[in-house]
Length: 180
Image 1 (spheres, helix red, strand yellow):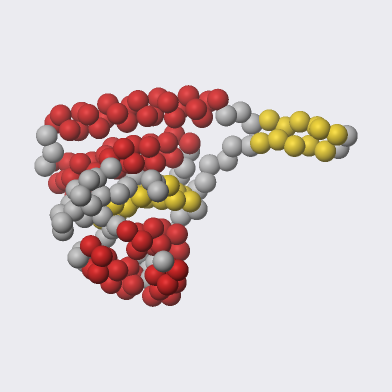
Image 2: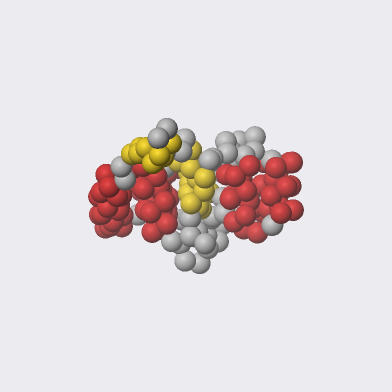
């Protein structure tokens, strides 16, 4: 893993493309999906799928909002002149990795993207792999409806490393969330 990360750090997009081809047999002109790509993916889904995604995300958003409300800033003077406390400050950018492969994990989009947006993260990027060379429409819809600012069709270590160290076309993030 260290070698792959270092290779991506050194060679950027070229390395990401090679690993994507090697591991996912996927090397499109660009990994970042356009608004049109997202709209097309969503248009291929049944209305019930979209409704279900929206319903689940409303539940996650409601709970995340309550959690955020329960986290209070405070400061106390524990000894004369010694002040301790906590201040909730959202990160500027986070990455959400949404696994795919044989079994896409839409719940990862709900939990990692919706909660980041509720927390106040300014820029949330999300990445998921293609499934057998195809766009995973429901996953893309879940990422979009959750509020992802950028959606990449890119998976595996090359996606996580790209978010972590950045490339010519992927601006790195401050933290990455996802299962595993």
